[in-house]
Image (cartoon, rainbow, N blue to C red):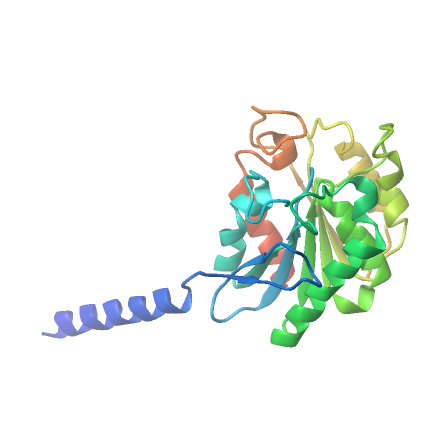
Length: 252
């Protein structure tokens, strides 16, 4: 009888646990942010908010067909108690080019999302920019440092000789000083022309921030395009570890 009672209590506590960690999907429809919906992945009780900004052409068709690391592993952040907001392009016809990423319109729309989140909960807000998305994250943090708790630069753009990207490196966007906590996340074998690890490491060493940390990786695989999601650039094979490490940094 005692064993049965213990078993029932275990099942009951397990059900309660599953309920409290049930992942919820919702969306924001606000023209001040975008003509496209902002997709939210969350749980009932959260510790922080994370806005995800993908690279390439950006998120331009609602939930999109992107295989970006952030989109594929957003649930892992949520399981750690971090609400995840996927920041879209202004509409389905507009690409997130380099110049567009630092435009007053796009940054203003990102700020509208930050203000919305602040209005619904009082938890800290972080922005993670992946690849080209780091341009948005860095530029926003320089312009509105008081509005967020920190940024994560994942496989960000650094010193390069590309005609398109050379003026949008973290060295130019952020410089040597920033007023928010900053996490640099990079694979040492990243072979993408504009996101080389040696420059990410150099940038990190020179950067002055309230708190700064570097997460560098050597494992995983590189089976796809050098600048694509299935390569060292996109943390192929170690995505879960990277997501967990970022979550741990956010919650410290």
